[in-house]
Image (cartoon, rainbow, N blue to C red; front, top):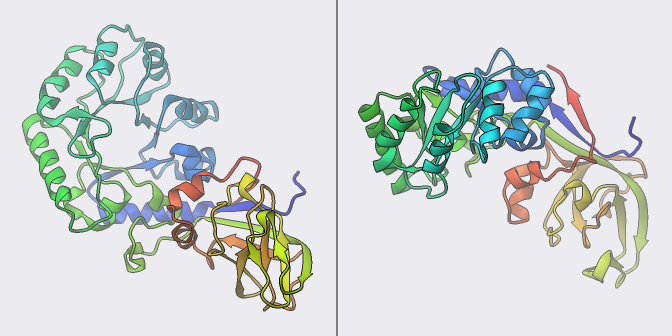
Length: 361
């Protein structure tokens, strides 16, 4: 039971429909559902449950996230994108049927020297231009052979890479990365994986055997043009309510530091949400909320638990009225642009103290 009137409403049916839309873009591929970072703030356990029977496998960042899903009874295959940091994790992965990404020779050496209770499913990460993680493309065939020589794999590895500029349609690196992955596929005969959400949405040549939709599952387009959203439905709606209303005279300020000063008689609502819940502190008077069918500007410094909203143009607003922080009227992508960040950050920074309420399909 929670009493504070602030919460994140998660539409699980929208997530399942967004996953279906991602699959329609590449019907001859398989699609991992990326649920790392608590399913981008949407609750990984609930998302995994709603995608059971739809997604052939899930993906998380590290083994702790995978084990949390296993403890919750999620039995789908789970790919650990960062692989293992220790030999003990290799053993855990074997025991819990976790697929592992190998992105360095050191990880391969670890596998060579560790006894496992059962064989594992391996993916091999190749660096084709992101320069973050991955085996150098020239070394990939030899490292692949080392993995196979361990005789600890249940099947031939998938070769994977990550696109650095998929959001930019005509970026020259896109073609280079796609061609490198294609060439590695011809050399090795391995199944391939390259496309993330952005590539899946606008770079058909990047759609290989496995795609890895992430942010698009939650209804956010990684692309700038709204027309390229292919009907994605936002899955998270964050709401709060008005807890107090103040009448300000010209010259009076709102919040810490007095950065916003009323230039005319103003009506300011205090809304029960703040940076402690994940709302961005650096709004600089640029962000909006939605109530009574209208937008209203966030004013003053964002506090840990509260924000100020100028409701001078909404005379009917009262204490207790619900306020949409983001959702269908104020899109999280829009808010992210206003505060100079990306939707990924806003969604994943929603704190655990903000309750989730789930809409079942």
